[in-house]
Length: 135
Image 1: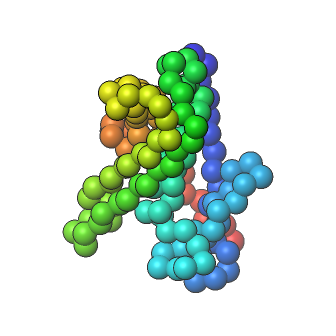
Image 2: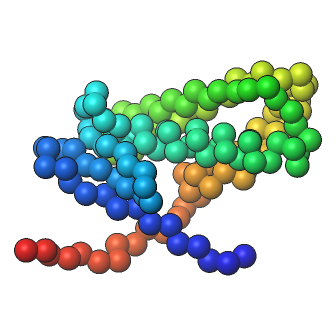
């Protein structure tokens, strides 16, 4: 498999504690404690739910699994003891005629194929590659 590089740029917006993340032509406004922007915790939960949904839509035929539609609820629990979340709960609601067992098997497949889940559950080295002072 070829090596791929993914890049996101995060910039300040001129508003206190408000930032913009950009990837290609897509932009997301991020801010802690704001109703007008997504918090970093919410962004992680969004990424996880979206990733699993994409896996389901991409592999359901290959896995011989059919559904009419579905939705996720993803909930993060955070205490004041650490910057990250202490627990993430994922519930999927499937509109399907498949058996409960087959649903569980398909969801196991989706979770094991989702890159975001892989990054959350397995240690991925994060290394600062530079610090620049711009004047």
